[in-house]
Image 1 (cartoon, rainbow, N blue to C red):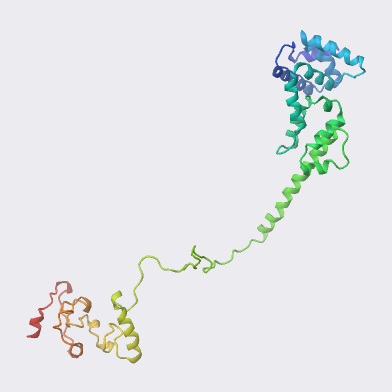
Image 2 (cartoon, rainbow, N blue to C red; image 1 turned 120 degrees about the vertical axis):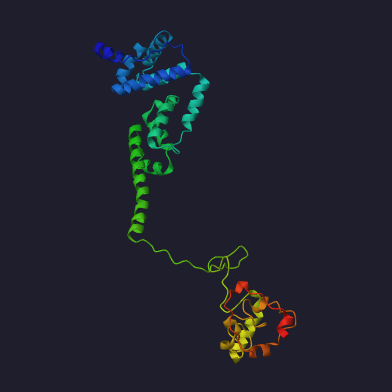
Length: 321
């Protein structure tokens, strides 16, 4: 015993006088329990060594409590000491709040390890549960999530250790099952990659319910060959009719053969002069130009060698002389 005590005190375990607050008493007990766990001490060794870490009021309390429990025939285990300790050094309101928290404890989003840690830390506030190993197992199992509870509750474990081992195994099995559900889908998609279908250009629709035109041109539109401006839409109609009868020019839409068109030679079909088209001819609206029949019969004059940009149109009166 002396060798055991000497080795234990070499780790400088904390002491308690009994005048500390409830929080300080709880911290002291947790530190002592962690040291016992590290040294792998049994309940019998824990109960024999704890008396040496109590001083003053704390020591007097445990000597009297231990004797009373032994007279009642109660075996002084570490669980018995811990329950008696919390009844003495924690206020009633504090113990009630912690006891209610323990009674309502559920696994929820916690994994099994975190749930066990929370369960153990609150167990000391429920003496009626901590005194019985079977009661601990029942309380622990009832707080598990439904999927784990179903697996653990089969053949209801009678001890807390058995319930804990089954819960860990059930959690690991469910985790493997969930992972396996996604592996075949990923492997199948990797082996047989799907080729996306070609786009449907008639699938789009606007908010008004009308189908969108995916091929609608943007920006400037190209003009058709053989047209001079958008104002000659009526000439297109005449051109279409003239092409059927062979009376209209396919270049300018005039009533003459295409090979006789002055537009080919760069001449205005109104004044027979080069350098501009009929739509911008100075004589277009003067009424002094020759009629279209006479104009088409005139011989085509030779094109001047000078640049069209330096040409000045003649006066209508001079053209008559």
